[in-house]
Image (cartoon, rainbow, N blue to C red; front, side, top):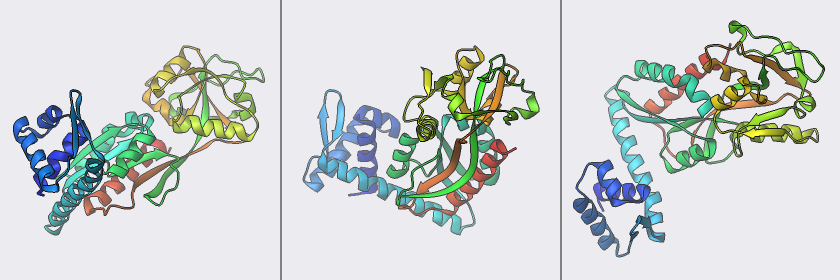
Length: 316
């Protein structure tokens, strides 16, 4: 086996197609097919099942795919460590971000990364927690920012921020006690009004616009309501926080989200924010990376950059 054959096989297996892999690798498809076939001959077993829809790894191919990803990852790490020995923090760093945070920090994170690591390459991936956890395990992501990840021996976790979820309502909405929620001004857009607090029991009576499962906020809200013997009254399921907030603005329901998600809006006048208590809903924002893969100096520096940018974005 040589590295080129392993790289070609991994790309075909991941993309499920020789055609797509050839385009991605910028090589001729016949040359790509020949190298993969040579690898199969050397190992004396079929690694891919070829059909009219593409190529799927066999059982042996799935085993080699897992090893191949690790081998290629180790090669990248070796190159980066050798670069660091020359005093250069270089290489590629792939970071996963949840959609709610990506809109807020993608631009400042890119600027901060380029300033701190001018010789390194940054890849940002937006996705939900389950997909990003798969990416960490497979080696496609070096690190990810996740809400409330479950503890696992496969993961290293450091907490970036703890945030209470708040009730975000149309400005003209009326609270269960008959009091109107206060109007927001721009400087307080991230903070819930302490004088307009609402119990979680009262929140359960409101028509809520929530993301579908397994969104981390949805799971957290349902768990906290279950602790008081209630369930959320869901009027709409919408996967997309900006879409949820636009629907709230139109008066179609209420949202339960971190207050900083309103930072995506230039005009917060249509919204009112109330803190939730009895109990509070506390969400934890963590930086996560694989405990089974060695990290480079470049990745460690990138983690410092992520921590700094997230703190600036979500902590008032």
